[in-house]
Image 1 (cartoon, helix red, strand yellow):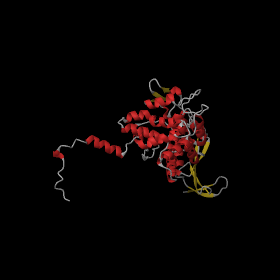
Image 2 (cartoon, rainbow, N blue to C red):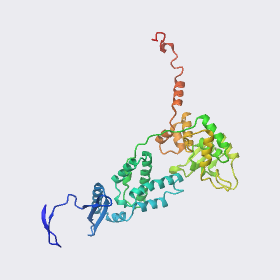
Image 3 (cartoon, helix red, strand yellow):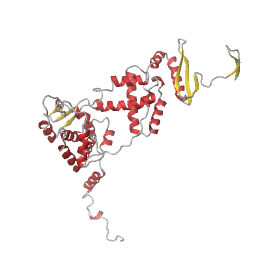
Image 4 (cartoon, rainbow, N blue to C red):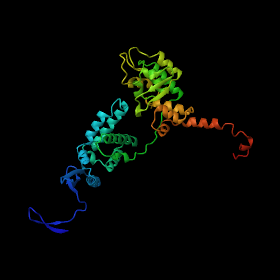
Length: 380
């Protein structure tokens, strides 16, 4: 510590070299916490100050990044990043990328919900202020609020996708979110129907006033198609000659070719086609249905089926294929999954089926009397 004279007031004051030059902190009574600001100079002599936030670690990381960018002659990129807020990027992402037909409607809805929560945390920040540590802090705070690991993963996945697009649009240099590790998710319980439940559900759908419900549910149970894919299905995507449904513009942008069983071919070909429309499942005006919840819930109640969502028709299809010996790779292709791991989560077998399979496989193997335990001397 040394004595210095203030240039304007002429008063003497104590001075010591800062431990972190370029880093300043002050107490904010509204936040009831210290707020950190960084200070640096561009090569042209222009002084820059940035308010980072309440995290000293984030402020030091951003300061180190600024000095590296300036040293490497990348301060023009820095100026560009300074002008873009997270909220602005999220709006651009929804307007230009996350919308039909580029993404499935279900994915768009999921992105909007994820960004609603992300904007509460990052909305006022500029892109350069969002560090890896800040994203990990977001994960922790969302978990502390009571949401599941799966929900946090969907939100972080949306963040990663949005930052990837920002790199493509040359708005940022790199995607720091790409290094964030996803949380471990529990596989959960895959719900599928017993033979009795399936028959009861289909019978209830037949008796429904909504005449589209039975064909829709029957198709879902025998193709594993998502509801959004079914409602968008057109007649040109059904190849009756070769016996396939061609699913286009699916989730993950994967095209799938789904075999038609004879009963489904007959149902689609002779039962429900309406004139002057391209859609398979549509109202009398030829427009695809947008909401089936009322008819679906009524049919489930009449069939006495609980804890079964429409999406579980897809789980039912996958589970039954596996239980009948179809390999996981084929099931993964039919469902359009991104990896075999996803298929394993959705298509695991019931304990009852496993027990029957073991008994059938081993029956007769140990019938040799020499290998049977003598129980005549067993203690009572």
